Length: 127
Image (cartoon, rainbow, N blue to C red):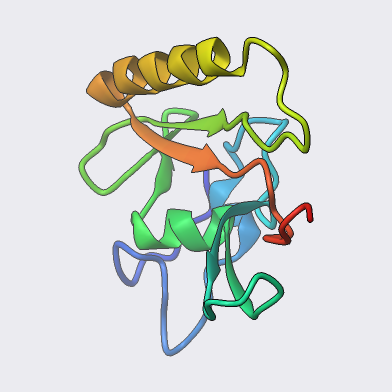
């Protein structure tokens, strides 16, 4: 089970940050410090970016472990999805790959809270 603070549903007390142990039911292939999204803070290609980690996203969702599964504040199970599409030179069938990815994501989102993991954690453009 997860080690979660008893003082509130977000697990934060007196400015204390949730420990990675709170999410000890994370899938083995997902790490708490793994980048899930990168947002450019400037309009330039090599500008400053803001990265959001798995832990930060889980904190936003008020996630916790329940019966060995990671769930959000609404008790919906959380699933992670590794995005594809960060190709320097895309494969010939890239459109089919992207369409299949979108279809799979739509199906998963009907039942689960889905955290999409970026394929470009650095946020740098390939050119």
